[in-house]
Length: 168
Image (tube, rainbow, N blue to C red):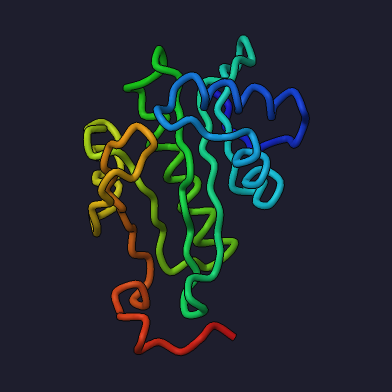
């Protein structure tokens, strides 16, 4: 398997869009992909079969200041084609993204949301150190609830925002 950054071609954009729309329960607009992929292309990692070049996985993320006091990474989408699940590819994509966020943007924490009924995703993220912090009722368009999960990276992520100084 070959992991790489988004190569910013129309063909790859379409492949990513197709993979996500086929396998995620939330019907994201093509403009959501476009926004993430064009604003933070360094945080879109893909996974391809080396023999066939078939796109079998993608993670799309971003990094922004949160309330002017900490840098927050956010994992927006993670998809592995169902016929390739259970092989550790999702864990590898998340680990690569986390390390890249720490190295390139010195993040204090990383967040994401996932459906409360998605036991596979919860098991994956919790095994990587993410913790449930909030239940978001009727968060998704399908009316399912979500859990917000957070991966604390620095001490700053464990302190209340009111007591932190702004990022300069």
